[in-house]
Image 1 (cartoon, rainbow, N blue to C red):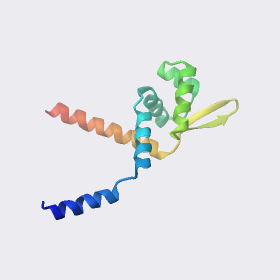
Image 2 (image 1 turned 135 degrees about the vertical axis):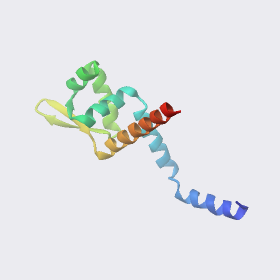
Image 3 (image 1 turned 90 degrees about the vertical axis):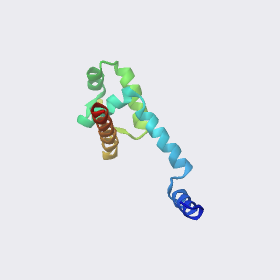
Length: 118
């Protein structure tokens, strides 16, 4: 590749990459997924909408610990709560959260498959 082709290629990429604020926000989003407890909660909610107590029972955690993690997930707009009487039922905020989880799991399965074949 000559210098002229390299310059046009790098200019092309420079014009396509996300801006700094977007990259920062994306990194922050991935940090949320970096906590295994939060990822377990998201995985539960991908299967079914649940109350805090149900999540706590499934994950063998205290209700206060689950509530804390749900606040973090809610602030990140990954989960939402719907008031039902005196309780709140939690669900994934939208389909994008499921897609992120499924892409991650698919990537892991592919890596495990390739590792086992080596």
